[in-house]
Length: 159
Image: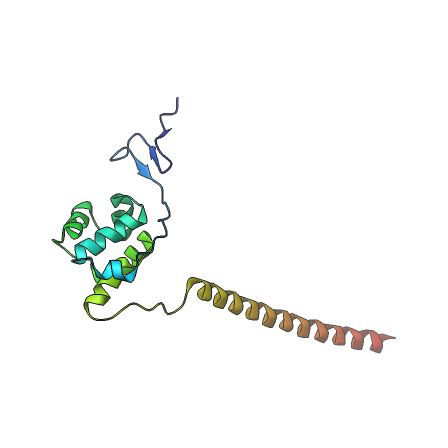
């Protein structure tokens, strides 16, 4: 009898694991708070907590992905610690929002500006791939014409 059982849509009980639950990666909820809501938050801990809650993910799904332990994560949520700057991008990617860095930027009198949207990045990558494929095809066509020319020369000389 298989002792693996489905407990929810996101976790499976696996005998022999440390906490008896193996979490599968879930996508965060795409939530956007208004700048006014973000700027009104009283401190970094509140911004961090809102970013986490807005994602719809569990704490474990967040902290295990960004490479910090549960205790440190808890300290960030209570304001006893802050998220290290080199982990901020991974955090934002995991929670699917930029609430935390937007709050931090506002405290400095700034705001975040997206340099390129995801759609623009994808379009740019597709454009580059298309251009590369067209250049490769043109190269093959030149080679084919050259080979045809050589073949015509060999056939014409033998006749």
